[in-house]
Image (cartoon, rainbow, N blue to C red):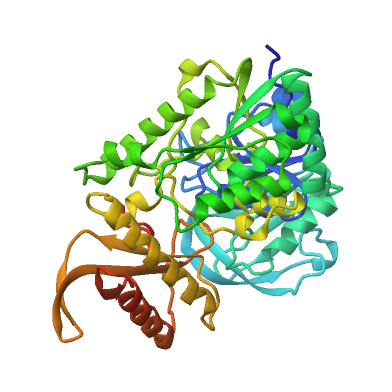
Length: 524
């Protein structure tokens, strides 16, 4: 069996983000990639020898963090990294660490800075980071310690009312640092400062494009599976699985065996749309397994959301395995693993509590003994969507709003039945149609929830006893936080009128106006 080739990311220029505990570490990486430069989050145990071995590293960025750089046990870096002829940018804690390692004096700040802060640029003519920027700027600060003297030989390039050394540059040592966070949206010109570092100091060529990524991925897949390798791929209709399949399809054509396990919990006509999209864009033949009754039987009497997820995940694996056995000689399994999944599985920067199980139906068992093919493992979600457009996939599929793996089964609060699925499908279609026609900015996610309870109502002078429907619509960038979307009253009225008039079994429509936190986007 062929071994996995060198990661696609290893063939591009790369900026390494050394994680020192910041909640914004992944955001730094995403901002660098917006400049068409590959970036990667690494542990602070990274050694200079490892950087040399990579051969493609053109810059290092030290992230922020909640610790005090002068206290025992705080995160450190390999001192030999400073001797490499590679530019280094320190952000927040990174500035404090670089400054103290080079003889600067670090103290508890007399006045901490948190939030929006006015920043003044000093020596702008000699500054690389602040070149071309307004010398009076607003930035986002979050620190309790401060560097009160810069390293000998370095020049201070910015200050605030409370912080004398808000930025310094030391070109002779390829060292640059800022106390604020240029990666967050609250520092609106931050991307320009990062551009000055990445393109100006690191001399990046901007070779991280989706066109180049596709070419390198196809080459990498062919190297891995060889001339006769057969690859199995689970297809859900989501952009991750479609892009995974599309790249592999381009690489090996009919040796890709896509399997679409239709568990019966998709939205109205969604299964048919997946099949139609496949026919028009792929060489390989999609196998659709209609398993709706099987999944419904397994969920009979189940109301606990965690049990629902586990049952659906377990049954999905069983169905997929049964279908996979029909593919003779298959030695590879394709998965739509994304870069955030890689970061989380490595444990880098992960200190969060588990709120609930992930919505996806879960990983496939190791007993399948198939080598993994993961063409998207170097990409963030927004990059996957750009990839989908580059691959000329249908835009509605590429920009499909997030949809949980267990589907409508966790949007029915209570037992899942055929009747409730039919009601929710019809109502959800109306909710989505009306929101898409509303004169407003499109919410990030919008859908219907059906609680398995009933309330009294009156329709046509008769008493009714029907289900309530909950409309959920939120605005978000990354699903970490979300605001409920203010849908115009006239559109809400239209939704309620249509749902109650067109969907038998519903006699009440409600709007969920809870943001995240304290709520979550999904109800289960």
